[in-house]
Every structure is written in structure tokens, then in C-alpha cells.
Picture 1: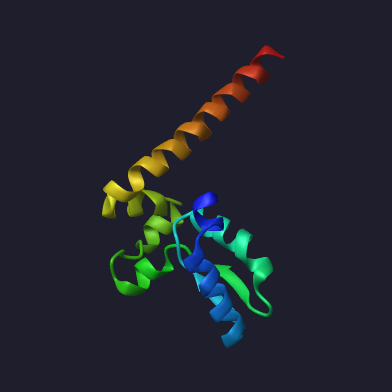
Picture 2: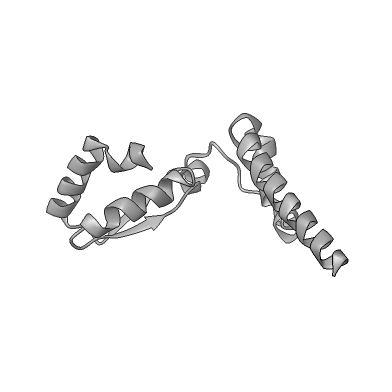
Length: 114
């Protein structure tokens, strides 16, 4: 992602991180930006390990509530998150689910033809 790879502020941050020499760096961005950032900049780190934590900050700050146990058991955490923040999460989730359903339908039709 060019926006990340050509970001001079991030280059300055990497220089500072290398001077501070932390063992672990938490990266809390939305996916896929978090993955692109870690992929592009982890080779430039002299010592540190980058760990992507995604939405953990949302939970720690209290802007997003952790789903109840019954929601977890039904594997519906994603629905619980969308209900809490539909404006931010609906489009991304809708695209992912649509793609997943399309690929499943396509595979089912292929299997049926055989």
C-alpha cells in the first residue's frame, strides 16, 4: 500500500523506535492497513517485534463493549460489533460476507455439476 510505504512520518517513527530499542511494538490499526504497515516496516526494525492487535484499543478504551458469553458461544461476535458501530463496520463486513457467500455458491455449483 503506497500510502504506508511512502510515509515519511512512519520512517521517522522507525528511526525513533530503533533508538529506543523496545522489545515489542503494538500496532492497533484497522485491517488491512495494520498488516501492510507491519509487512513494510518490520524488516527495518533492528530489534523490535511488531504485534498486530487490531481492535483491542476499542475494548480497552471502552468505545466498544465486549460481547456477552452467549454471543461468543454462538460465534457471533462480528454481529455484536456491527450492532455497536454499524457506520464503521457494516460496509467492510458486508463486502467480506458477500465474497464468502459468492465463493461458497460457486463451489457448490461446481460440485453439483460433477
